[in-house]
Length: 362
Image (cartoon, rainbow, N blue to C red; front, side, top):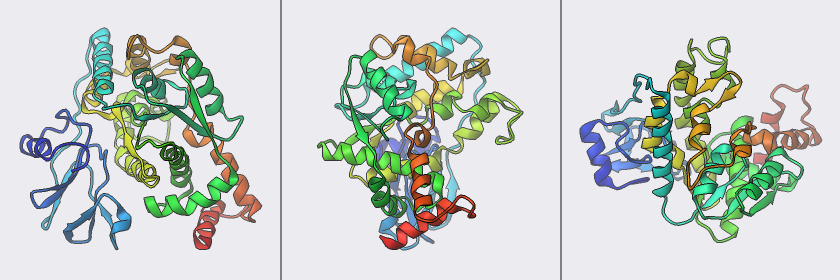
């Protein structure tokens, strides 16, 4: 069983509790294959043969992902867990305190000192402040993420290893992440490439785990489309909390990609900000603790004043985040490579065609 002990998952199945205190799970249980409510670990089976399952789709001839919150048996998929939709906590101080306590507990529960993927923003700085493992940032030299990580590491009195990406890295790793994740659309490939190249450096340095800040944007209102709800056409919800719930629903697909990309480098991901306690506290936040004016992730920033271990410096707490593929300049350089290979922007889906060409040549 990935993520936790079989006995704990069996208890979750018996109680139907979606957030029972784990940090996710997936695997075989009593003749079926289960995957937790947020899909924090991947699980795949062959069509109509759930006994033939694997956490790695490349092990199977026709891998079909098990839906989040379900158990798959010979009778098909059965929804066991659904994400709660609790009423918001009226007392904002109490709501922030609950978030702080949950994050503190989640970070404390991490065994040992895994490496930390560190972009210098609030999410990764929370992990860096509470975990003793080495910090890694990836990107092209001169990128926002490298600059931000260096300055944040100084503020935290830490050192950060820079994994400088090259065009050769992107060319050789593209077929690897496409095969590992089973995805070839440009957005997924670019995100997977960033994580894979950082994880590859972590493995080369002799580490076997990498702590990631995944889930913070979705849970705490980090996206512009959530802040702009209901005016933003990218979400259907008509409230900020509704839009937040909508993007949380995208986590199973995203996490499947991210886990598979990191594992392709021989590294196991660790995601403390997706532990059940953090998720539960985040789901109870009122809209004003998600977004207030131009500030997103309000509760997370307030919680970071005190946790972990004395809090995160204000200069880091107030920073805005760039998406990984843009903050690292990977998206820009990936587009440059595609154009240099003859796949011009005027072509329909020029990046997708470039990816297909790279995989054919591998």
